[in-house]
Image 1: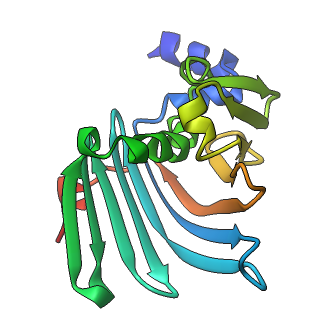
Image 2 (image 1 turned 180 degrees about the vertical axis):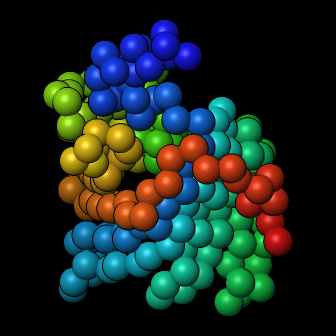
Length: 186
């Protein structure tokens, strides 16, 4: 126990974030798109569990649900009565998008270096995709840690055409016990 405490006490903020096994939060997502007269804001909840589970649920202004469970994707659009499930292997173009979104929640800048050029300080990191495939979807990812350095506070995804999506997290709970049912369609 003492060895763990000493390791955490000397770890940098990014090491602390990458040590989280689970995370749950609310978020506000603001899309700045050239085709929109003004930014489009939505809100919802997110749950993340290592090694590869993600639940991204938009609640306002419309509801949708995206679940990643390993390489399986489940999506639901309740207002349209549509549910869809598939393997990421069947939709490789979505794999790049999923990697872009989950890189911030993973928190490991060392792991990110395999796919991104990474520059960072104690609270901010900028990731530039290395692969042309990923660059088709996102030209840069900016990560911002919370003031206390304990969790991700925001992510900005900038697309090649200059459009961007800003995601701000609040009510973050680190290492909660998550019900396995969160990662399955209701």
